[in-house]
Length: 172
Image (cartoon, rainbow, N blue to C red; front, side, top):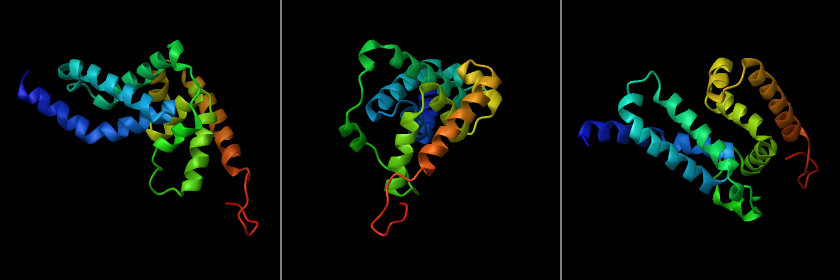
């Protein structure tokens, strides 16, 4: 294998791996599965690197592989296990978010259906347009819009509904 292929691939992975992991984690909610999904995506990217590195967007290629890998994982019967409460201890809180808000956000994201979660991740984490999201998911732009609207309504309700009060009687 030539050094330039490996150098380009290595540079891409070094610069984007954390972002790819966060994407996979947002999709599946399990750090171990997210790691598996990213490894699968990177293995596929390495094989396709000569072609993918010349494409308009390597990120678009990898994003699509991550989504497809996640879908493949959810179709495996042994992956339908419910996560235990201890699984939540393995993840780090996002920077810039208070831990109690982070827990509420992760819980709200986990409560979304898989299709809504995918749309939210692509639209609001990756910053894709409606059309780009529709193309990545293989659905119509109308489906993206309706799924986004429903997901944001659910998130808004989950995050703005007072669930606990602090010792002063105010919302956390």
